[in-house]
Length: 269
Image (cartoon, rainbow, N blue to C red):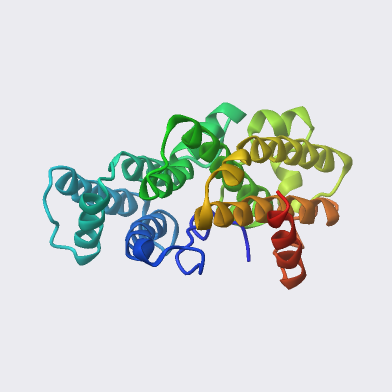
């Protein structure tokens, strides 16, 4: 299993209370399908942006208290009404997906964090809202976890993103460590690349750990779910390190033995 910001939705998890399954499934369907509009298939950028604009209009209907004709959005409207959810996080997701269509490089870390704030953090905000746990401290720590998960996904998927013409490693970090795009294309494993990845992983691990108190503080199933997510993300970082930062030929994934370790660590967090 890879760390991916939509696969971290606990859609099928036995830890998810049954009463929340329809809500999580409806939000997941919206997020996953919108992400696919921006990223999958052979549509032109103009077609992708037009499709995402239609999603935005459906959200307008929901925000106004209406029920869209589209069944997926009708289910989402019911969830928004039943759980008194804000559509603002969903609008943020659409903003990030539109950015994916037109932006393929990030000049610095703050610009990458701004993207993560809209592409990943809304997921945590919506989940906290479903649990009626979206106070300021919880949201702040959830943002740290969600952004860290998004960054981990970028670091493990450097080669996959590169094939799509995208580089999420900040340009200033590449320059600072003497890693050019040609070296990325060649899968160069020189000292500069290892130093760059070590820097990114250390920063991402610290970010994840800054949000980890939320997993210990939330009670019951949601706390256990989040502990597993946190430990799964940290384990992926370890796998990248064990591979000597070679994400070009050995994309890190979690195996059965990893999940045993993750469960043990979650138990003792």
